[in-house]
Length: 100
Image (cartoon, rainbow, N blue to C red; front, side, top):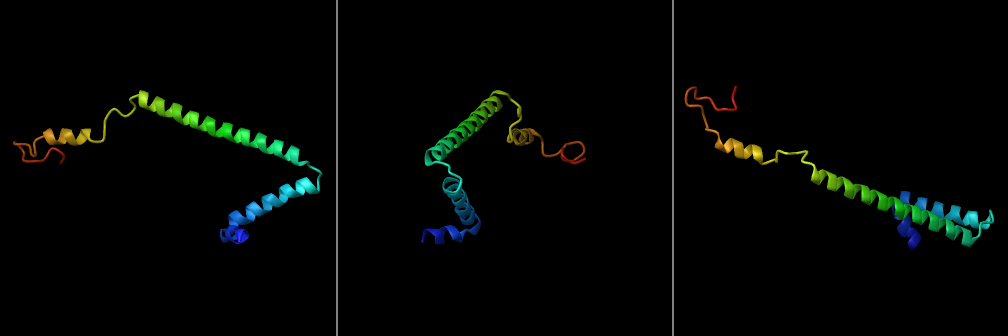
């Protein structure tokens, strides 16, 4: 039943089964102890958590820097408020201000 669910999405299921087979091959055929394998997994997990924390810290710093600097001083609605104050047509020529 579990294998059937894994093989429904064949790419993921086959990759997971192949990875577990490779790990068990390392334990049984090449003489790797379970204790040493657990140590390797803990080291990998430690570096993975550190990498995720570093990425989160970089994202937080970039967000704070972008909020601190005023790199986009004109808001999206500021142009519309300027157009409302302009007259609809020039009295002398009868042409709207946007037309050339």
